[in-house]
Image 1: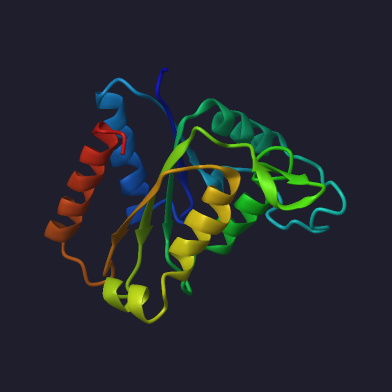
Image 2: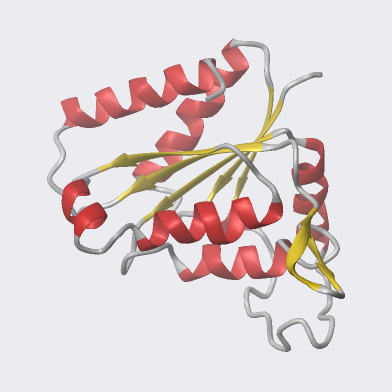
Length: 193
């Protein structure tokens, strides 16, 4: 099976470490001959608010149709975002709510609380940037953003395995530290992991 990667940059600021991570991963994967698509959520034209929940359909914007097509065609997803308030930016949350819809990412079953997972046979890598020390985020906060994205969203839809790489602290990082982080990202892209 031909490997296809979709990189989703969820940082609202394109002049960010998240954008550098997206480019480095893309370069690494392409160096191995892997077909890569990259989207910056901030560039998409869509309403990030799921106004009616799942009770009523909203207009489905062309950019979201394109994203769903790319997700379907890809066998590996890469999500990049900063950890804000323990999880992820509102724009990324809105994107997930508008894209990972019933009958696309999962289907409800009449007599079961468990969904039918419609995005099986896909894997994912998540890159998270933050300032909270990793030990504190893991031990005290218990990884709310990591758990939400991995278990409540991606695994819920059938995407497994999901691996998470966290870079912290960003605010006090040196140029040398960032260079090492980006080298790691390039290598992971090259190995498509």
